[in-house]
Length: 379
Image (cartoon, rainbow, N blue to C red; front, side, top):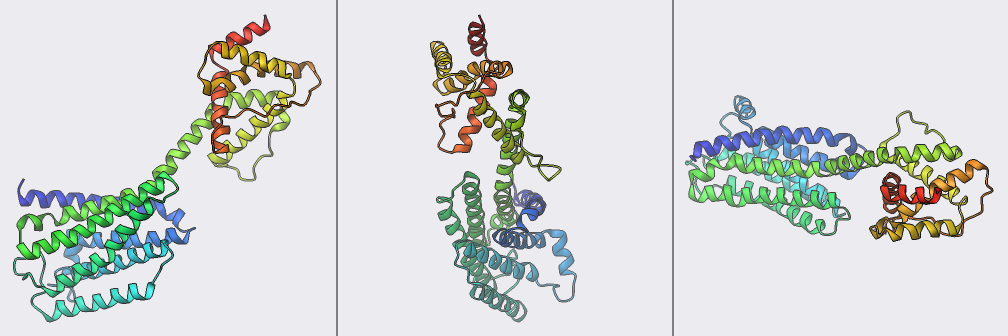
C-alpha cells in the first residue's frame, strides 16, 4: 500500500461515513424533537457531521474559492470543528447534569478568535499536511489542544456511564460514543501532532481514514438505539402473530373479554400485543373456573409422566385442561371459582413472564404430548 492508496481509501471511508451520519441524523430526528436530551445529542452529532462534511474535498474546494477563505487552508473547517467539539462537550455535561454552557462556548469562542488571528497574522499557521508547517506552529497546537480538551472528557464520561447503563442498547450506544470520542482524541493528539513533529507522509495520508473511522463509530452509536428498537418491534410482531390462533380460539369461547377498540385507527404493535395478552389472560382466568383442581392435577401428572422440560410443564398442563374447560362452558356447566393462582413463566419481570408463558401455551397446544393427553382424557 502506498500513501496515495491510503489517502484514497480514507477519502472513500470518510465520504461514506459523512453520508451515513446524515442519514442516521434524519432517522433520529423525529424522536429527538420530543426529548430535550435527544435534541442536544442531535445538535452535537449534527455539528460533527457538518465538520466532517466541510472536510470533504468538493466542499473544501468551494470554500477555498471564496475571497475570505481562500488560501486559509480550511480555516472554516477548523473553526467549525472547534464549535462542534463544544456542542459535544455541552451535550455530555448536560447528560450528567453538569452543564456549563458559558465556560464551554465562551472558551470555544476564544479559541476560534485565536485561530483566526494566528491564521491571518502568522505565516506559520499554514496547512498541517504541508511540509512548510513548523513543528511549533501555534495555530495547530492550539487547535489540537482545544479538540483534545473538549473530546477526551466525553470519552471518559461515556465509558464510565456505559457501565451503569440500565439497558443493553444504552450500554452499547455509550460505548460506541466513547470509542468515537477516543478515535477523535487519538487523531488530534497522535496523528496530527505526530505529523507536526515528524512530517511523516504516512501520518498525513492517514488523516481521511482517521476522520472516517470516527464518523462510522458515531453512526453506530446513533443507530444502536434505533436498531434495538427495530429488533424489539420485530420480536413483538412475531409474538403477536404467534399468539393469533390461541387468541382467536379463546375469544371465540369467551367473547366478552375483548377490549374496546382503541381510538387510533392504526394501533402500534406494542399496544396490540399488550391488548392481546390481557384478553388471553382474562379468557384463561374465566375458563379456569370451569375445571376443578382434580382435573388440573390429573393433567399435570400425565404431563410430568412424559418428563418434559420443567419450564414447559405449566404450559403443557394448561393446554391439556383448556379444551375440557371450553367444552364445559359450551355445555353450560356452572363455573366454580378456582383457588389456584394463574400460571406464569416465573420470570422476574411480570410482563416478560406473562408473554413467555402464553407463547409456550400457544406452541404447546399443537404439541404431540398435549394431543396424546387430550385423546386419553376423551377416551
